[in-house]
Length: 291
Length: 291
Image (tube, rainbow over all chains, first blue to last red; front, side, top):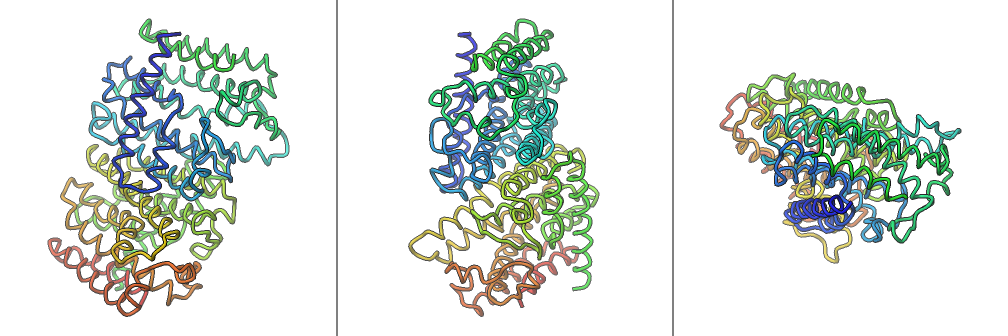
C-alpha cells in the first residue's frame, strides 16, 4: 500500500497548508491561534477523498484543495466541540491537549464556530469548483451533511442513546453512525463528482460502505487499540456501557462485517476501473488500522 | 412610526415562518425541537433589514426571505452559544429559559452548530437570489461576517477584555462591537444590494452607524432598562466591571453619541430617496428602545 500511503501524506500536507493559510489570513486573536492548533495533524482522510475523487473527474488539485480544506475544517470543528466537557469530555486529541484544556471552554466553542464559517467561505470562493452551480452544489450538500439532518443528528442520537433505557439495536447504531461519521465521509467522496457536475451515486455507494467500515474499525480500536499510538483515550465506550458494533456483533463478528463492507466499497468503484486504485487502497487502509 | 413597526412585525412573521419550516423539515430529534425553540420570537431586526433592502433593489420578498431566515438562524445560533455557562452564562433569553437550561449544554452546543449549517444551506438554495453568483456573494460575505474575522472575532476580543489588566479604550470597545454585533447587521443591510448584484457601499455605511448605535443603546438598556420588559438579565456589564460605551462616555454622552450615529445612518440613505423611509425609521427605533 505504498502508493496509497504516499498519496495520503501528500493530500494531508496540501490540505493542511491550504487550511492553515486560510486561518493565518484572519485577524490576530486567541481564537485564531486555537483554530490553527485544532486544524493541525490528523490523517486528513476526508481531504484525501476529496482530492482523489476530484482527480477521477479531472478537476485540478489546486481547485480541489479548497473543498479538501473545507471538509477538514468541518471535521476539526466537530472534534473540538465533541471534546468539550459537556460532550465527550476528552483531554487528549491526536496526542495533544484538547483546545478547551490548552485554552478554555469559551475559546473551544468559538473555535468550532469559526471553523464552520471558514469551511463555507472556502467553498464559496471563485476557485473552489469550475462553475458557480458546482460551488453551490458543494455548499448545499455540505450544509446537509454537517447539520441537523447529518452529522449533528448523529451526535444528537448518540447523546439520546446515553440516557435511553435499553441499549441501541444494530439498526439504530448504524443510523447513528451514518450521521455522526458517515455524512462527512460521503460528502468528501462525492465532492469530485459534484465539482465536475457529474452523478455522485457510485461514489456515494462507495462512501456509505467505507464510512460504516470506518466506524466499526473505530469501535474495534476502542477495544483493542494502543492509546499511545491512537493519541486519544480508549475503552471509552465499554466504560460508558455504550452499545457499539463490537458489543452487538462481538469482536470477530465486527471484523467480518468490516471486511464485507470493504468489498462492497470496492465493488462500487467498478465504473472507474483502474483509475480508482487509490480509493480501493483507502478502503483497505480504513480497516487495516484495526487489524 | 406606525408604518415601520407594522413592517417590522410582518418581516418577523415572514422570516420566522420560513425558518421554522426549514427546521421542521429536518429529521426528528431533541436538537430539532431545541432549534425550533431557539429560533422563535425576537424582533428579527436583521431579517427586516434583509427584506427591506431587498425591496429597495426590487428583489421579491419570496426570494429575500431565504436570506432573512438565514441571518436569523446565524443570530439565533450566536445567542444559544453566547448564553452557555462557559460564555455569558445566562439563564433567561427573550423571557424564557435558555436552551442549555431547558435541555442541556450538549444540546445547546449542537443546536448552535446545526443552526449555522442550516443558514448556509438556505443561501445555497436555487431561490435565494436571482443568480448563482449573487447567492455565492451572500454566502462568502456571511462566512466573513460570522467567522473569525467578524462576529466570532468580536466575541474573542470580548473574552480577552475580561481578563485584560486595563479597561478597554473607546476605540477598542468600538472594534469589539463592530465584530460582535456590527458584522451581522452590516451583512443584513447589504444583502439586498448583493442579491441584485449592486454596490452595497451606501447600505454598508448605513449599517455601520446603525450597528454601533444599536450596541450603545444596548449598553444604555443594560443600565436603565427593565429586566421584565427586556426578557433578560440586566446590569451584567456593570456587575462584571466591563468597559462599555456608558462607562466610557457617561449616560448622557452615550445617548448623544447614539443620536449622532442615527443621523449618520440616515444620511447614508440619501441615494435611495423616499424609498428608504422604513430604513430611516428603523434607525430611530434602534435608539428609541433605550429612550
